[in-house]
Image (cartoon, rainbow, N blue to C red; front, side):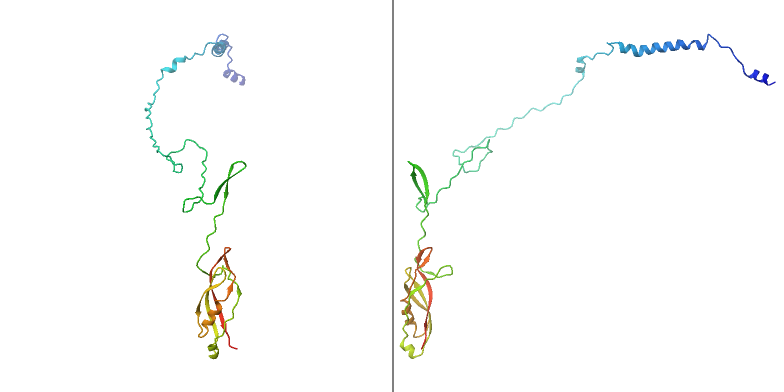
Length: 237
């Protein structure tokens, strides 16, 4: 029973020799030929690639931008003065850098227009040179100057004792008389006046001061007249 059941389901058919199985070798052969024609033949060909013609680009139109005509720059007219002053400010930029011009200061001149402090001379067979001469010192003052802190006062080298007036001695008058004295450049007292008076004693004090003598007072090495204040004391004994 079982063997009959399988015999009815499975059916074995014999192979057919002239159908689908015979076309496979022909199909493989055709594919190989097509592959050879597409790959191998183009590789073996030397003139397959087309040549590009050199004049083919000329046919493309090119739009050119118009260039405006150049306008010439206006001519600059330079005004050159007739007389050129080397010390004036330049009106135009220089075209190059030239050598520097040395300016020599002129020597000082006095009120007459003559140059001071320069004396021309020559040495070694006429070689010129300049000798600088110190200007003369200013003249000493003719009017008496007052003794200040920066001026050394003169020193008394000759003294005269005042004579006590008899009237003042009887009246028992004593004290101090202040006198302003003018001393010349040689040290002599040429003028004297009373600044602080003491009755009965002024004339005796002036007579004594006019006999005093001092050392000359120097200002820059030059003797000058001065004004100074002196005192004369009177004391009763």
